[in-house]
Length: 266
Image (tube, rainbow, N blue to C red; front, side, top):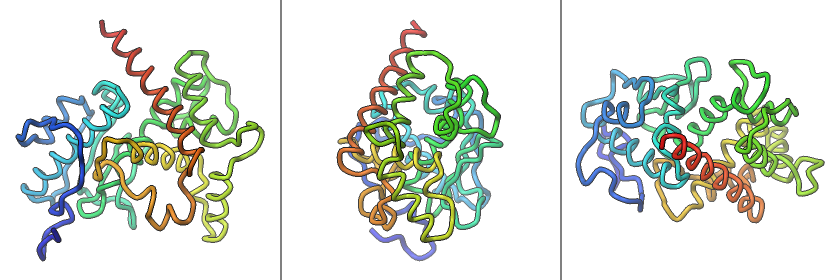
């Protein structure tokens, strides 16, 4: 179904095959705020009530599906209540979605943000987890960049598992040199005369969204474009066995994180 003239991209359905989390009912952004314990939720003034309702249902289903894939509780999705959401508020030029580290806010554009949620959520996680993973971490740092710079890590079994995630993303099997994923991303940057695809936090976020799209549980509002998009054709997503290896490490890490949080709450 193509949106009618004057309608936003939201009016075209996003494919998903997960459980019916809402029981057929609508939810509001206030429901999302309370259930997941996000710090704040901000809606743009040009978002109509109808668009807000559609978006709230899409966000809710996507976050529930991400919980199911990662096997984690609601507190992980909101990063223990530190993450804020914004929808249709404007923001960065030429960007359909972005994470603001200064305000700890994940923002999606009204007309083009769908499919970017997993990528931006991992940016938020990468930022949030930095001071849990490393001994010394500045407010603007991301864990992925400090890992690549070989900063001192805090000893903890979960940190060891997360370190293995980053190792699988960045390094070749001999653990001594960048893998083909990193090299291909750097080559694209060189050809485009920019530094974006090979940034550690971008490499990590694309790897994460790729393994989310590979799961049997599908949600196109949560993630899309890691297989057949122009970027995927350029080679800036993990491929084949590397993609499978990254998946195993990420799912293992989040499974144990979820179990640790469950044990802590009982």
